[in-house]
Length: 103
Image (cartoon, rainbow, N blue to C red; front, side, top):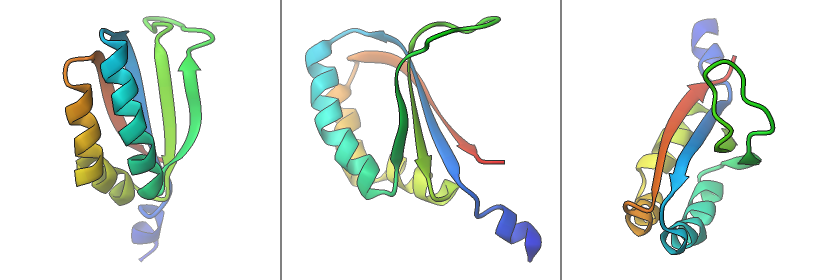
């Protein structure tokens, strides 16, 4: 039972943008993505270009969003509302998204 409770901790959605290729598509994405993410329980913790990058890191735009748990983060990403945001973005950015369970 304790192991199950441990898995119910917070989760983090980390987006690293390598390039924003189309600012209009990106703006359309943001208009749809932010409400979809907050409706899914996401709280934006950081949205900016990295202040420092070490080792093999890059000073790219990085977004960190906290969710109540990994299931909420995944359901938000895979949901219809965020899917519409992804459709609006299309090929407008080069990035990767990672969902990470909190410690």
